[in-house]
Length: 113
Length: 114
Image (cartoon, rainbow over all chains, first blue to last red; front, side, top):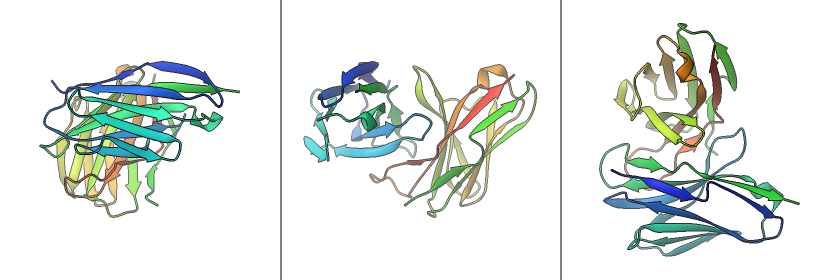
C-alpha cells in the first residue's frame, strides 16, 4: 500500500532558528515528491518538487532533499520567520494512473518570537 | 497566477439536506479535484475529473457525487448530508497530462452538518 508518513506531527521553534521536517514514503513506482505549505485558513501552495534524479533543491530559505534509495525526503527551513508558521505537506506521485498522488498528514510548524 | 475559487468559506447545513459545493478555476486546466481534509488524516481524494463530463472516484466517494458540465467549474454534491461529512473541503486544479505540474488549491470550504 502506498503511504507517506511525516514527522514530527508538530513543531515549535523560536524565530531565527533552523528546523528540518521529514517525509518517508513507500510509494512505488516513484515519480516525484512535492512539498506544499498550507497557511491557516488557506489552501496548500507548492514550495518545491523533487524528481528521481534530484538530491537537493532550494527555494529561498527552504531546501528540500531526496534520497530515493531510502525513500526519504526532508525540508529544511533556515533562519525561520513568523510567516513560516504553517502546515507543511509532503505529496508523493507514482508513475501510473491519472490520480496517482499520496498525501502525508502534514507537520504543523509554529514559529514563536 | 492560477486562481481557484470556492464559492463559500463557511457553510452550515442540516442532516439530510442536499449540499452543493462549487469550485471555479480560471486557467483552462483539464484536471480538477475534490478533497476533504481532517485533522491527522491529511487530504483524502473524493472525486476528480480529467475532462468535461468525465469523472473518476477517489478514495472516499461514498455519500458524494460530482458534476462537471463546463471545463472551469467542478461541483461537489452531498446527496443527503450526514454529521460525519463535517469537514474542510478543498478543490484543486492542474494542467493536463501526467507531468510534474502542481495542483493549485482553493482556500477551502469549512462545512458543518448539524
